[in-house]
Amino acid sequence: MLANYSSLLSSYNTLQTDYNQLLADYNSLQTGYDDLENNYNNLQANYSILENNYNTLLTNYEELLANRNSLQSSFDSLQNDHNNLQTSYDSLNFTYYSLLSNYTSLQSSFNELKSKYEFAGEIASSLNLMYVFIEMTVVFIATTIYFARTRIYSSLRKPKPRQQT
Image 1 (cartoon, rainbow, N blue to C red):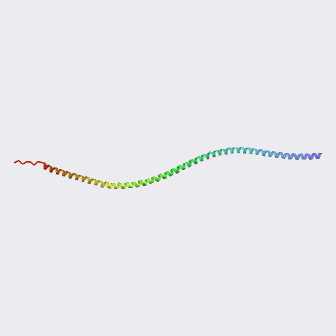
Image 2 (cartoon, one colour):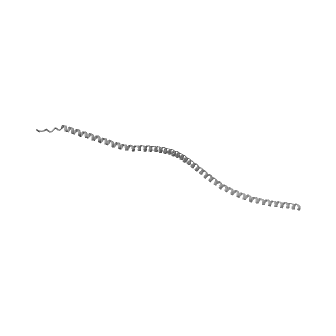
Image 3 (cartoon, rainbow, N blue to C red):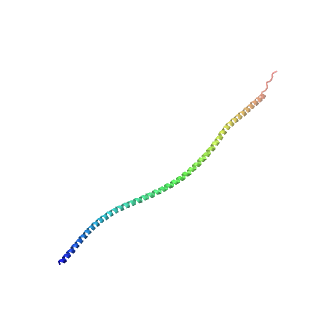
């Protein structure tokens, strides 16, 4: 029985050693598990923070996207206005150069007529002086004829003085 007891004691000690080893392994695993659980909780907290940051960034992105779309719409409108203004500018520029060409043509025609008028003005002044001279000559001749006739008539009408005998 003693041999049985010793065999049992030896088995008990082996079992105790295995149990202690298993208990140490369990404690080691429990510590590892606790560490993993703490890491998991830290990761979970970090995940929640990152998720909140992500949601904030997503909201900011959507606001920026809406602003970008609004700005793009404004840009497109301004680009359209610019194109319309450029077309109007080109049209007005074309009209300006057309009017400038017409003005230049009219200015040269005016200068040509002015030079003709100035020449004609000199001729007209000479011609007017000739007309004045001719009219004065006619008036002088008419006056001379008038005085000559009135003298003839007045001498004919005057009674001759009678001679006294």
